Length: 352
Ligand SMILES: Cc1ncc(C[n+]2csc(CCOP(=O)(O)OP(=O)(O)O)c2C)c(N)n1
Image (cartoon, rainbow, N blue to C red; front, side, top):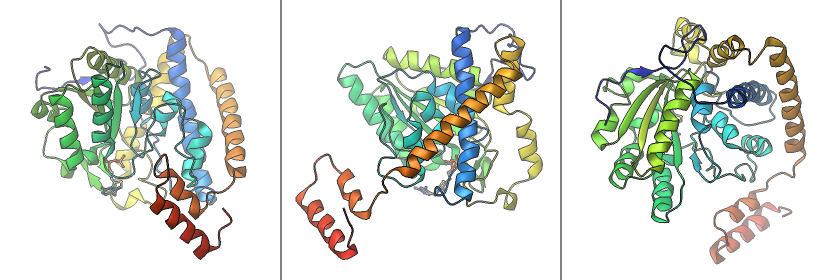
């Protein structure tokens, strides 16, 4: 069990150098792939905001600034693992393999917006049911003797809800192979972290449940990757769950319907912007000769084209109708649902 002083784990310093005494166990290809996931996510995020402004998708929660926390953690997941993302977590989803078109369809309110080939639960908009759900999935995997971990992500606001406490307690008691990544982005809409909890850190809450707690620089992708990797190893070895607090910042608004200038100082945002997780990591890669501005430009162009193509595909998909929603409640529709669907079709004269 870690002691209670919770130093912030870092792997890189702000000049893009490895911190003394820290070693890396990733290949050059993996290091670049992780950067590409971050860059792709950023480009998607920026495009999604423009799509929302053009009325082409619904309300959108930008994750700019949190790419290192999301990508660094999800990069450790293996194919059969589980991801239970919270609403601002598309970078984690993309890293684990969420289909781009399905991500866009989700923002358009389409019924196929959460259909994925990987074990990815729908983005949790409520706060935070994904925590006990992840515990259930992790515990079930353990009972079945499968080698799967479940990663649940949440914001700092999520730690004030009962689901968080109930989930963590149960996970620790049953040594479920679960990892809880709290992205402490300093704000829960307009509620700052010091109004959210009187605990000095979120990581220390782990002590009360009897699990490992870690505090990490959430803008240092290598550090988040390292602590999450250690957590997955403990989980797979039957040593139980881990609570990770990733210190980061939501650079943008809470959603496209929010105006953060009403409740936070711009100087605070500017301070965090100087530690942009993508710029920090790019510096590191460039110093090692693994990346360059030219590669960056070429990668961005390719990524923009991939996103354009997915937008085109998503926008030509047949629209979801009101009657469709009855078909996705259970695997097989109950008689009651068939009746309700029929009534809706008659009342709204829908075509399917
Ligand atoms: C049960 C519940 N209560 C209230 C809300 C409204 N709500 C949406 S996001 C949010 C704040 C979430 O903050 P945090 O968990 O820190 O995540 P962040 O949005 O900062 O990434 C609230 C209160 C909700 N979605 N679900």
